[in-house]
Image (cartoon, rainbow, N blue to C red; front, side, top):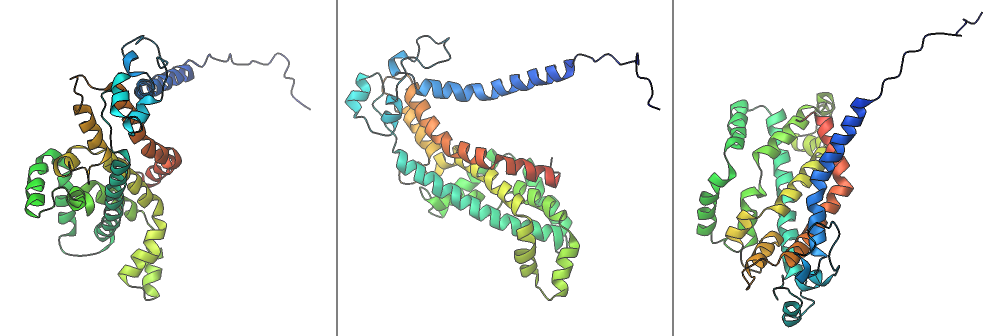
Length: 303
């Protein structure tokens, strides 16, 4: 016989204050994170003479694409000055190609060599392995600015100033963070898979290349994306060793564009237009592959 549920006690449903507060906090964080990007785009779409007008508006004032045309050199300097701009332009195509070359070299080199070093620290047995790894990782505590002058002196003595070799030299081989990140992932790889390959007669190199690398593609992809974004946004080192236009990257080109304003005041609309164009490649990469980064970090348990 079915129990009589008539008049049964039903607990009073509580108002979800916790969820509402969590959503409000998330909305606030999203606003704080995304608002600067929107303001960059808003300034880039604003007419040069109206950049300081109606600053309380969230929408562009006198919306125009002239700033992008000025930065790309599609407008002659006289017309740009007449419209309120600085008359300066960026060799955007050259700077974009240079950024792609520098970022590509660093990503390929650092991912390859860091993977080999991390696998050696994770799996191979050799004297003082743990001590060497600890000593190497301790470099994480050294601020990058401390090594800037020694690296510059070395690059200058090698004759690599204003060359791609000089720009990529400090980060081409490996960095302590990248080795540490991949070592944590390699430690989680099932040893039985590698031992089965050794039983079949595979060498250390074949086990690494044919067995471990295919398993660790998500981690390698994550490292490549993070390295690409960091290299793309780097400014100080490329400015010091690669200020010549033939090797000038986008970040340095934007800095020089900002300093070329004859009126003394920065050309904010042109600068924001160039910044918007420089953001687009990394933004697309993060949108398309951002989920892979989060999945790999969760899988490795790396904090």
